[in-house]
Image 1 (cartoon, rainbow, N blue to C red):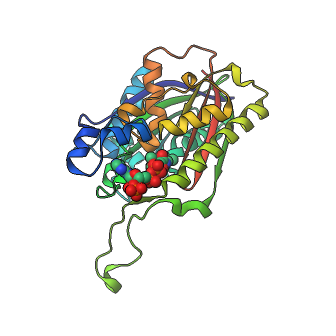
Image 2 (image 1 turned 180 degrees about the vertical axis):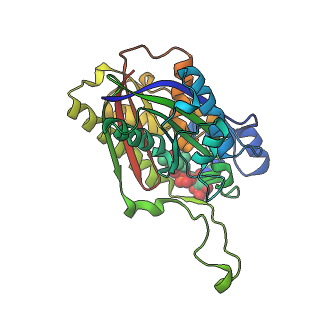
Length: 320
Ligand code: ACO
């Protein structure tokens, strides 16, 4: 028994912010951003919130799958930017869509979140505990980035992507996940300081900090490593893989990974130009776009791979 994606959905806020829009409020340019990252514009929340975006993507995925919300056994929301400390965003989605029979919780693995969530639900399916699940990757990083730090803020956008999964005979073939907590400080966002009102006054809210070059080095080393391992352990040749659907972080990261794997760049679908880096949402968002464009046929082998804060990474080989 394995796990098959039977429906996808996505949501991005209506508010689109171009590189030129950013250049009006900070020392940057469309040329700098496009040539370094491949990003032209991103969607930025005007107050939609993580749970709202996640629920909208979920509704679309359920509709495509032809699954009623009450049929869901489990809802996993991968996010680093929930609206609330509690209840979880997943519970808010559960309420919004009426999935009264599901267990719902959030999972935090930053840009690897969707893969970690998919693999977690897959384990529940394999052990026979659940049969029908909803996985959502959703982030509203616009509230976590430091808008006075041009090195980071220009990279990110908000959005959500979702997939309905079912226990089935075909689907996930193999998966790999990993973490390296020692490297955590290269990409972090303190949610509150450890100070509290009784001892130190009002706690401060933190913003994202990133060592861009370290993240770059990590991604271009770890992702090919992980994909090679996946291919080796399944005995699948890289030429059998139709698409390598990667976390959408940066065009130059894609170029480097494609080169290291010796695979043509056109097998790495990209929508980073229109969305920027939407963190946990980026993989399900592009999966949904491709699915709706009819890019996947039954039996296609695809690899999805994510990498991000933690540091974390993960890859899954699946048959559509
Ligand atoms: N506009 C104009 N100039 C800028 C901007 C900007 N937005 N940002 C930085 N600069 C300037 C810097 O101030 C610096 O100028 P200086 O030399 O006068 O000081 C110069 O550009 C180079 O800055 P670096 O930070 O060294 O730029 P770098 O070439 O490393 O590119 C980038 C930065 C694009 C972030 C790159 O490091 C990268 O792609 N890293 C990967 C990080 C990533 O993708 N993170 C996503 C989140 S993590 C994830 O999703 C897994």
